[in-house]
Image 1 (cartoon, rainbow, N blue to C red):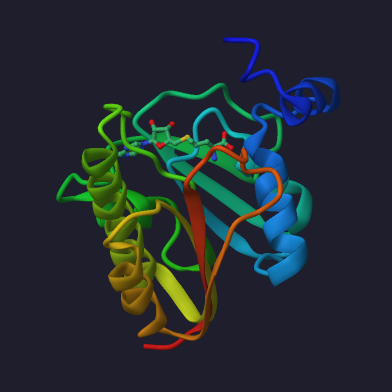
Image 2: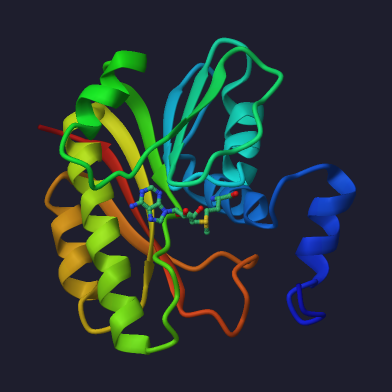
Length: 196
Ligand SMILES: C[S@@+](CC[C@H](N)C(=O)[O-])C[C@H]1O[C@@H](n2cnc3c(N)ncnc32)[C@H](O)[C@@H]1O
């Protein structure tokens, strides 16, 4: 990892035992938007190496449940109510696979990112495609009044994607947490109080 990537949050994560600096983004977003609470069942889409899962587990506590899903295999957690599935969210039977673990969730969060090509437009559209898939899953799996959080790389399709999210929730917002790097063009789309 280059020196530039080892910033303050990276060092803090190392010191405090988080698997990634991304943990702080979820903590910051949650303290602003109150998306997760004690006892919630949380689905984390694109979860490796598990920094968000750790932060989510701290919030939902013993009575909650955290299920992560990623292409990558991740190191298991000690806690019984935190598990990860290794799978591609674009596979056709993904809902069945998730529902074998849990039928419905209070919150769906997703920090999913495509492999970066370096070509901005390509990365933006791939990111939107994955975030739309995360939204499709949230629409199937969220309980009524559930919450949704998803990352998207900014670009010309961000507004349209935001409108799609907005259609399913009574409150929607685009936000960029402090722990996102200044140079980063990622934003987080928040949807609160899902209704079907
Ligand atoms: C930025 S990382 C997530 C970091 C995580 N939030 C954390 O705190 O540790 C994005 C993840 O999205 C995953 N991903 C990308 N495409 C995917 C797909 N089609 N299915 C499942 N996971 C995918 C990548 O493997 C990668 O681990």
